[in-house]
Image 1 (cartoon, rainbow, N blue to C red):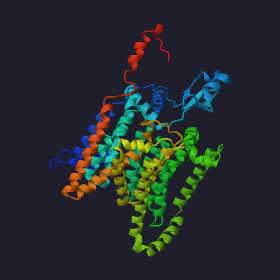
Image 2: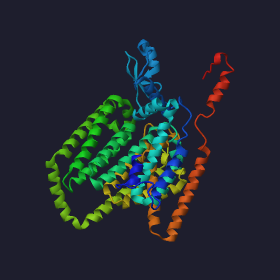
Image 3: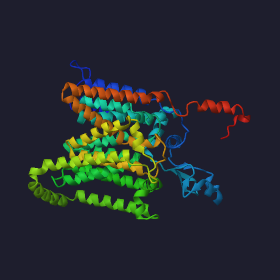
Image 4: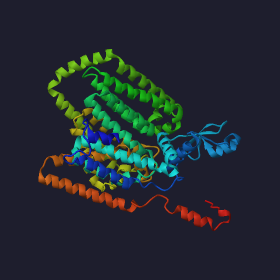
Amino acid sequence: LTIAARLIFKDTKTKIFSPGPVRWEIVVVAMLVLLSLIMFFHPAEYVAGEGDPEYYFNNGYHLAHTGSMSVYDKSVPKMSEFEIGTFYYDGIAQFFPFHLRNRATGRIQPLLYHLLPTWIGIFIMLFGTWGGLYVVPLFALLGMLALFALARRFAGLIGATIGTLLGILFFLQVWFSRAPVSETFCQLFVLAAILFFYEFLSSKDILVGIAAAASVTAAATARPEAVVMVIPMLIVMAARMFKERYRAGDYAFVNALLLGQVYIWFYVRFAEYHYVRTNVAKVIKFLGPQNGMNIFLILWALLIGAALVFFNLPLINRLLVRIGGRVSARLEDYRQDIARSAKAALALAALATFVYLGSAPASADSPQKFFYNTALLFGGLTVFVFVAALCLLIYEMDSLGTSFLIAAFVIVNTLSLQESSLALGQFPWDARRFMLVVVPMLMVGFGYLAGRLWKTKRVELRALTIAASVCFLVLFCYYLAPIYNHTDYKGIDRQLTALSKKMDGDVVIF
């Protein structure tokens, strides 16, 4: 609602129904919302299923009915060593990821991040059990509005409309907007963080900076890999210390961002230790097989503390400003060339990443080619139309800081999926990791390219833009057709009912 109001009203007192020319932006947003409702608000019919969707939903259901995220299993204190060894291994329940934290009380704590099940629990309390299945469709709709708002900044109304339309009709976006998965849920916070960060760099507004930091913190509470966004943001803010004295908005943003990291650190240490350790296993293996995670947490805490000191001491800021002033005076004639070269390097790095993942042969360490498989949903090699468009956006963006943030996060997120120890080798399931930032930013990039070609007002380029957009829309709709009315586990209830009638006592044995 906030994004829609900001797009519609901006900073004026314009009335929606006042006489005057048609506000096409309002019409477009209404159309995109309606299309999102049609595509997303048909959630999968299962409640007790398998895998992450089942964990998230049942955790939310448990929270709604008990008020506790933890599960208390009364049978655990009575179990023998043999039974504990049978049902639990290394502190992890057989039905991963439920972790036995206290054997004496039988307290079992879910390891998956808790922001999504909390929202599911709230929706169950408000709207009943089936209401919990509408959390992700709602956040998917809001995510597409955030995508539109972000593309609107760079691509104009035409480009933003095309990019968002393709995003709403993309197979993976629809597929993962109907099931309780955290990637689509987190998508809104990631896009909002990029949007607010871009606005903050140009305005230095305190509230916008706090909104950006809050979005990053929320994203990191929904998905662990969202923490990666903090690093390029802090690098950008450190670079700004060489250019100018920090003002209230700078201090507000940096401190809100770092305090959010303090919160995330405690959250990981006391609630998500085992889950994060599994996620970053390849990253921390050089720290030691036994104490790697503890060393990782210590280093993380030290970095947060050092950053709090570095960004809050005016003495450091004044010193860096003097150094930056001297360097800037010598490089004044080359400033634009340096910025252009930096953005070109970022664009080429992003392009090289996608080329590598699209062409690298499978190996024993990385047997799955997730980006290659995902590219098929873009039409195969035509995915590089979207990749090239995103690289063009990174190169031509007016904000080097935002360009750096987008390029760094897209590259890390894309490469980490290929090397993830949690990848199961199932498609499209594993491709959900791309929903966080890669897929939406490819749509923003295509929207930017379409808007840029449209603004040339050349007939042939506008015709090319329309033709390419229509071709992709037709292709995306073709892939969507088989799943438009499809929901997971459709007919299972009828099969189980029919099977149970053939057995005494309505018993079904698996």
